[in-house]
Length: 132
Image 1 (tube, rainbow, N blue to C red):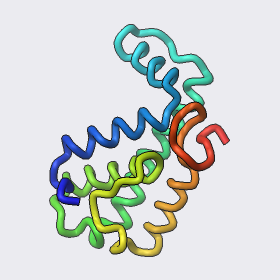
Image 2 (image 1 turned 60 degrees about the vertical axis):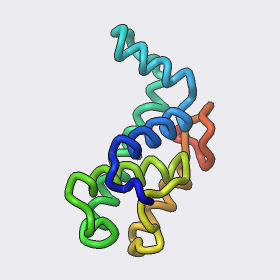
Image 3 (image 1 turned 45 degrees about the vertical axis):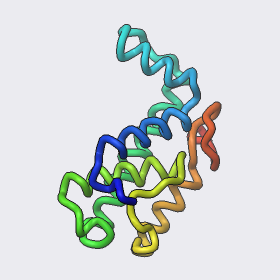
Image 4 (image 1 turned 90 degrees about the vertical axis):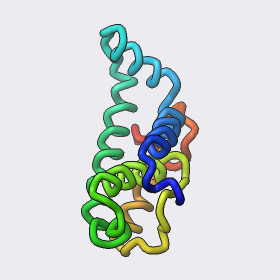
């Protein structure tokens, strides 16, 4: 929790967790799209799109519900960094950057929902798979 004000560490851990929750083939397909301009096959899109929706949706919901609660002591940019990290960590790595015992009830429900969904088929995350 001492790294809540260090976005480089938060995003590095989140990226590693996200890649672990995706299938290795989906990570490679995304890399091929970004660096070589290739198209992404449909089966990889079915893993990437729900992952992006859950990450950004979880981030927005957690940021809104905890802006004046758990995130209140942070600067506005650190609030967004930590909301994204908590959204990513709930689904894949299980780390936390803040004391989750201070969550409000709605945030607990959102966090549990993100944990329930988990990662994509072929990834190492638990929970139901994103294609379910």
